[in-house]
Each structure stands twice: as C-alpha cells, then as structure tokens.
Image (tube, rainbow, N blue to C red; front, side, top):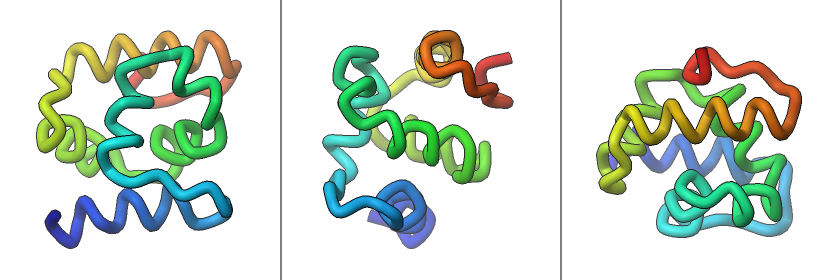
Length: 87
C-alpha cells in the first residue's frame, strides 16, 4: 500500500478504537448498511481525506469513481453531512 493510501487509513481510524483495514473500508464504501455500522469512519473519509486521495483509494480498491460519487451522495443523504464528492 502506498504512503498516500496508508494516510487515508490513519485519518479514518485516528479517533476510533475500532480500526478498519483497507479492505474493510473499501467494503464500507460499497455497502450503505455496512457503512452505517461505521459512520464516523465514513464521515472522516469524506470529510477529512483530500478528494484526490479519496479517488486514489477507490481506484486502488476497484471502486469506480462514479460509484464512489453515488455512494457519497447516498451516505450524505443518510448522515445529513455534505461531501464535495456527493455534489
């Protein structure tokens, strides 16, 4: 895993004792029900990880960018938080 992708996990996991690895985070970004079990991690991904790194992470985990955008919109609608990727 690249240094940039590792920094995504550091950012997403920093405040939580429940740590997600890259595969678990990728699964959360593809399944809204799973994401709802880790809302803080997903909020941190969309709110604190730079957009370019969000896209890089998605591509590295075979998540199409348009699918990530659709997921961001779905998560935003559920959480009430805005995300630049969701627009």
